Length: 176
Image (cartoon, rainbow, N blue to C red; front, side, top):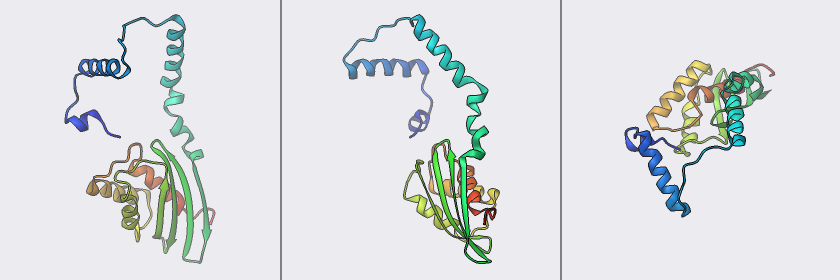
């Protein structure tokens, strides 16, 4: 995933984009698009969909359900170590973290899920980079942002804070 501005270095004029889309739809589909008006049923449907997706309830759905979207479980290994697991539903996909904590630092970590991480092989590099780190949301987010910047990571809908939140949840000593 990318943006037009990133690929072109600038945002093109919206009328230009509309014209290109129309021309390419016509060429690809072998049709001539004809400007028309919405039927009353289409207008009503558009209005109801718009009301739903513009509502404060919908716009803050993820925020309101955030606590329900973090699932975690932990198992104590010794007085100084435990293994924790958490899943977190971020806008860019589900993040699953399995972490071994020893003396309040990451001994080992595995980050998986259905999110987009470009280049994908850098997820393993991120895990390596986080080993030995003390777990706080601020330190994790800063470390991950630095990693994203250093390696040119693109992760649509998966901010450093989202990953940090999953790591902190998995590293929490509650339920140990």
